[in-house]
Amino acid sequence: MNHKMLQEFQNQGVKFHCIEAGRNNFIQWLIAVSKEKSARLLSKILPTKNATLANAVSRRNVGLLAVTKKISSADWVIGHNPGALWATLIAGKKLKCKMGFDVEDYHPGEGNDEHLQGLTKKLMEHVLPKMDYVSFAAPLIRKEVSKDLGGEGKNWLTVLNYFPVEEFAAPEAIISGPLKLVWFSQNINFGRGLELVLPAVKSNSGKVELHLYGNVNEGFKKENLDGLDNIILHGAVPQNKLHEELAKFDIGLAVDIPTDRNRELAITNKLLAYLQAGLYVMATNTKSQHSFMASFPEMGICFDYSTNNSGGILETILNNMDSIRNNRKERFEKFRENNWEVESLKLVKALDNFN
Image (cartoon, rainbow, N blue to C red):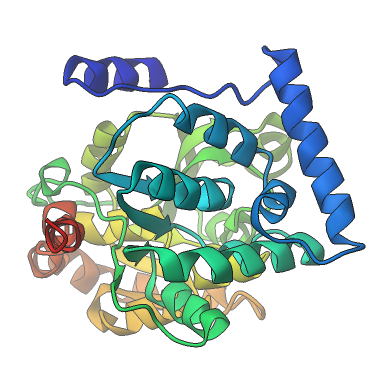
């Protein structure tokens, strides 16, 4: 899929400078890893800044800085992960062009390495104020970064990861039979939140079906799914096909467990896809999902992941199954203006403001 996408963009005139992330070029890999490990060790002893801080945050900084030497001019340089923070700033200064950064996740809250989290926060505090614009993938991520920096920048914007409107068809077919739940991810595995709802699904055989899209982990399948006639595995499918398939279901499961601070603040792509498809959403009450769903109370319901009252919530949904199905088209139309074509105009406007 990656090769196909690269070819499509190359055919449109896009030039790619691909950076080896593995060990195929052993010398480059060794240099990047050595710089990361030595810088991170030094950061535990002495205050670090600039390139040393960037190397401590991510080995990707080395490869990105190297490739900027191949580029002679640009109108914009835009980064979108911690390893690109420092390289974006350096490339912007070198090329004397505008700079932007997309905060896709709350990077100082990713994982559980407190030292690395602190380094990432320090680097963001240094770099982001120097950007000509900063975009955020969720309102609460933006709010948290604002706290870290002591206020917002003048050109900050929230751009949610909506999908193209054409990928979702208005629901026409009437769904009948058991209540149909759907969940998707690249991988169907432990720790993804499915364990929260599986007992309720199992106890409602005949009333409820759970459809799963993605590559299933065999250990998870053997322990949780085998022998259950109301759980259906569909495998992995391309994005546009997946979005077409969503029209077959009643309820979209957004069952994220906040294993770190970032997961508490992020809005997942699956939540947005369910809403664009007109599904009724059953979501865990992470701060971000609860806050977002509060703006669309008729579109879904949250349950408490800490006490796990998913069984009671599913019972409530079953009792209201007819109205949920009857209101599908109304939900679809009401949410229709929330799509990538509309959302991306925010980014286009930000870029145009500097022309």
